[in-house]
Length: 261
Length: 261
Ligand SMILES: Nc1ncnc2c1ncn2[C@@H]1O[C@H](COP(=O)(O)OP(=O)(O)O)[C@@H](O)[C@H]1O
Ligand SMILES: [Mg+2]
Image (cartoon, rainbow over all chains, first blue to last red; front, top):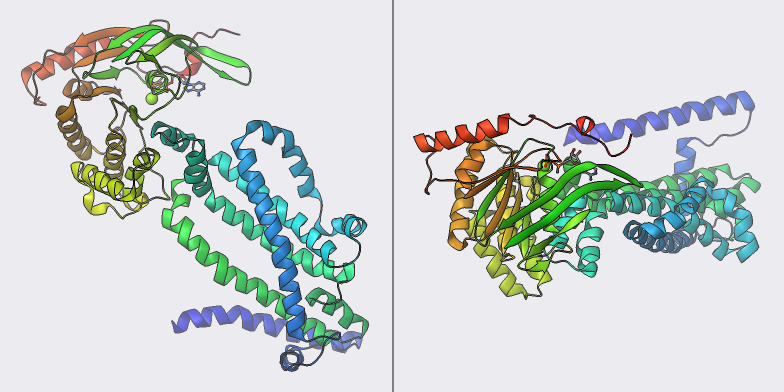
């Protein structure tokens, strides 16, 4: 127990140490104040205490970012899972659309900015659109390949036991591709998060962690920018640790699908 | 009763046709007979079984099951595959209930029937386990229970015990005979082992490479229960070995005559 805490603590300590060294070096060599871990921590504390950051509290920024992320990602997840299952089900549909998916995959998230602004103008919807677009492709591709990799003998066994089309879909295809769905969602969530922060910086949403970082830069409040960066990392880690890891434990590990494959 | 009429089979993939795998097979398997398909690997035993199961379509000829043409898989022809192909996302009991669920049975009846068949194969204690926690032999027992629960009119088994160790294989052979003896359902059993065929079957059909797909067809003159080391048992094995030795031991796809160059 003590050992495992220590093991988890070591990378954090190394990271903080490196940060401290870089901060001191940059400050010394370039003569600009580079926020140290300590300064950032203090700033973070006062932001948590309710200090305003670009006209809003930190909580408001976090909440707004999470909301955009959640909406954009939900759209992507539903569309991606739907597409993957449909294309895995129908060869015709797959052949007709797969090339498009491939092209979408090649478009970096930020490249959607002009498209988003042209369609939706500057603001909330454009940001959500960008998240949805970047999160959609990994979900769709993973689900599709999961459905296709599903052993044909599973489908044969189900048909032999009298499964109709609906049962085949709901009781075999869907649960059988659950591991692929989960890993697609995981990648999609990460992609969405990254593009969210970038989109907020550019599209101009007025609130949000990305927006705060870019605003803090204009006002030379680098310490706040660093505090926001920390929050962004922490949120990402929380989702990994407390949502996806347990979900995967529940499904993939329990069925030992990876071992069978 | 299974009637195989003038069946020929070539596989088709991306517009290409494979060499002739099965050529002009005619067989009638009466109700209740235990038939072993015996032959070197690659001669098309699985192909023939899959045709009877309805998983694949013949290139020529037709298959009748109780006078109705086979057009696809169905619960009246239960299949036990070489690997158990249990659904890894379902518990043992849910796997056995799968077919019952397709028949629209309610929860109580499903559980009752599934437990009954799990009892029959000695797996009732593992009803709540997930398949990956069980040994190969246990999984194959459950695969048999799952098919018996369909109350099929015929059983089709493709080398079901070939991946098990000798001990569990002989155990399962005896259990299969016991189960079969209780209902005397038609049983088509693929094997490449002479001993296994002679131990199990009423009738052995020897298969060879196309164009001579059926090389022998004999009713075994042995009473049940059979003893592995009796004189008559060994003499039947010897005579079957003679017929098999005349065939190439293993048919590689490259050695077969091909329809195209
Ligand atoms: N889906 C397929 N497509 C093309 N060729 C196949 C396919 N399945 C089997 N074959 C070929 O058909 C021949 C017979 O295979 P199979 O029926 O599995 O033989 P057996 O079960 O007797 O070992 C083999 O040469 C194999 O390569
Ligand atoms: Mg085979």
